[in-house]
Amino acid sequence: MAAWQNRTKLWLSNVFQRTRKTPSLELLKSLHIELLRNQALRADNQKGLVEVFRSISEILIWGDQNDSKIFDYFCEHNMLSFFLTALAQNSDPLLTVQLLQSLSIVFENMTNENAMYYLLSNNHINSIIAHKFDFSNEEVIAYYVSLLKTLSLRLNQHTVHFFYNEHLRDFPLLTESLKFFTHHESMVRIAVRTITLNIFRVSDKRVTDFVCQKTGEPFMTHLMWYIGSVVLNVQEALEEDREEWSKLATHLDDHLDHWNYINDVISLNHEPLTSIVIKTSKNKLIEPLYLASYFQNWDTLDESSAGPVPKISSLQALYFLTHLFVTVEHGELLCYIVNRVLCKEEQDGGFQLKGLAHLASALSEVAKQQMCQAVLSFFIVILRNIACSEYLTSLISALDEEGLTYKSILQSAVIGCLNTVCIQNTEVSSQAGLMCIELLQLLDCPPEHLM
Image (tube, rainbow, N blue to C red; front, top):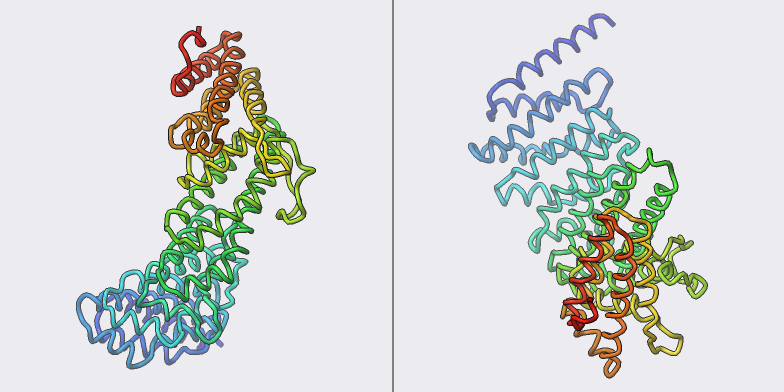
């Protein structure tokens, strides 16, 4: 046993000495021999193999820039198979992390197009993506998602056939990455969002069909459910002691980030996917959560809404809707929201201008609670957008002859809010008053109404 341990220590020592040498073809050949000798993973050789795989990736990148014979040798002896063999043996997390890191480095830095095509060929890459890693280890998750992100940057019309499994009608890069979309670590979530955007922007019928027919609606429905859960997290944070309010900013940022992501998807001008996004956002989140809470009208919801509907106050609903107005640039969706906020929809399909009463009431409530200026400003955002000609003109056009009445009622609602805040003598109410006056000017309100 002692002799065996001595030989292991000697082998490790030799490995470390070799890996400190200048990259060269001879060094790669030497590392290849080490891999041949250690194809079966054992507890005593995995530490040395960590250095071997790390060095191979460094030599490949060096060879890409300096010596093409290095990659020729790598291909000729099918050295990529050693990476796959090591992964298949469910190695120690330390070696798994190194394998993932080495692959990421190679895929990220390789500039030779033929070399990249070789690495992606023979379905090797899908085997790596679909491998059952030990995701109970957070470091493994981080490096795995990092590898997927690197691979997504290599995805284009010329490489998509390497990632899409035509035989199985499967797209592992998308399906596997989506499993981490709601991961508790924010950096993982951000990476997954980047991966999906890189996939969605590829102009290829196979990708389009797979996204829209197999993953689009289920994914977007799950996304809306997740955003709804973030809203609940905000509600829970508000109910806790002030000492716990530090969580509030995190949850609000999360809510805002996901609507920024939705806007990024819409901005890709991928018409079939945009249609799915708009449909699911209306049916699974905006109507059953934001607007139902805003009008306090949960009893009218149908059973198609995604799961139990959390109930929040009208004020909170209006606040979350303002996030859409500072992130989303889809005019049709924003006009739809404004129409619903200002005009409560009747069952016969007509509209009534009842929403303004809710809006004026909510704004008055803000002033009464003397909420901070930053929060109050968010509530005014929706009114600012309503006053912008793009939305106002669209709404007036949609309401035909009711347009003038609509504008008059909107003016009256804002004046009512102005009268409420002017009664108070606080910095917050002063800011609210100034914003109301600015809005009334945008609405061409007669000067005598501002006296």
